[in-house]
Length: 327
Image (cartoon, rainbow, N blue to C red; front, side, top):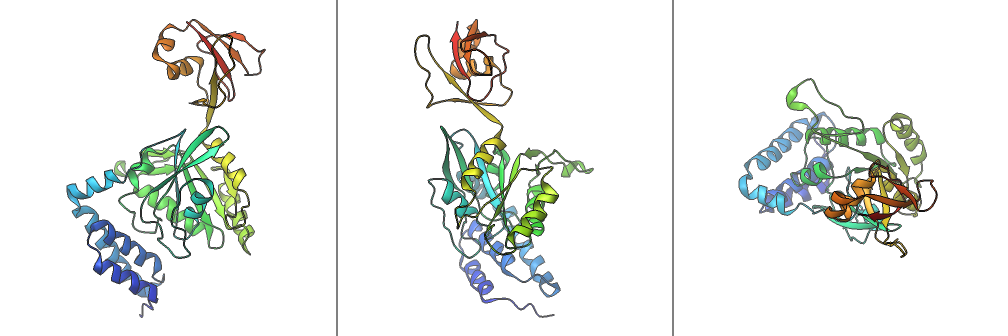
């Protein structure tokens, strides 16, 4: 049965033959997998490409491990959130629109070959977004796992101009291959396949302005609204971007707490960022270990109470609270 490979496939094949390093070879093979038509005539070729990718990943040894570690992006800001999705879903455009990063944005697959960080401002805090190489069925780039495993949450970008369910299947399958689950914790009966890392996730339906996109978004919403928050946007039109920022903040389940010294105004530009449910003692620990050890009481503004009311160590804080610590 003929394979009917398109011209772009042979361009990627040429890059594979000319590549000098394992990561470059893997990237080219991933691109070939993404480009090739999906039918029985390509099954043998598809399996061959996957074997080559697996062999390259396994044979990398110490050098590959060093390269992988070097590509790990250190966390900055209130949280680190990778942006993941299939080729041409619009990941790079979203990171470009929300942050100070400048990832490559193109109308062809695999424009992003590495992890690119950018800082998204939300009111008075910054959240680090990571543009990542695309996920394709059957293979996962070796550079992805470190930051995905350590991430505070994941943003899953779905191209609403294409079949949304096949994209979600690819994303969840590839994450499962890294032993990463999304939404509610899940596991397999086989002990080797147990999901080790479960992440909060937000589904972003991109290209909502394109004809037919609304219907695809409704399909996503109906199937996943009980498990994930969803946000429809159009980067091209600038639709829904501010709402997306707030949705990301809410996804992280964090609060901002402000400190003040007696007789002075609070510093509202540099909040302490804590998980929802944190107590006054947790905030004291973030300020200084001496406060954590010797805290007698605090005065608090916010939390629906009268201004300046006294609070004990176990008082649960809310977003926007102002605290004045006393030792």
